[in-house]
Amino acid sequence: MPQELARQELGEVQESTPWTTAGGPDHSYDETVREERRRWLTEPRLTERFRLVDPHGAPIYDHMIRVLDLVWECPDDGTVNVVGYRCAGCGSSREVAALAARCRDGR
Ligand SMILES: [Zn+2]
Image (cartoon, rainbow, N blue to C red):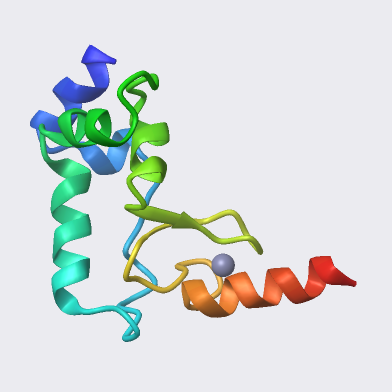
């Protein structure tokens, strides 16, 4: 995806990708984790990191950021949040959202 990479380098990531940090920090994660995930999401070496985990996978941005566990998708509202942040859609932490989904689906 050369076009997406070009956009990342121009710093226009918010336009081309749906992830958000608007839910605010999830305090079960370290600030260092939040910083790292935010940095990885926008750095040009993302594809290199992805290749270390999945040498043969398609280097599609939305796929890579999930494989590298940089974002989590809220099971309730589908909001894509940066790991270390609460859901911007419903305010749940990742852990609570996952637990709630497991309880609901287990019925
Ligand atoms: Zn949510």
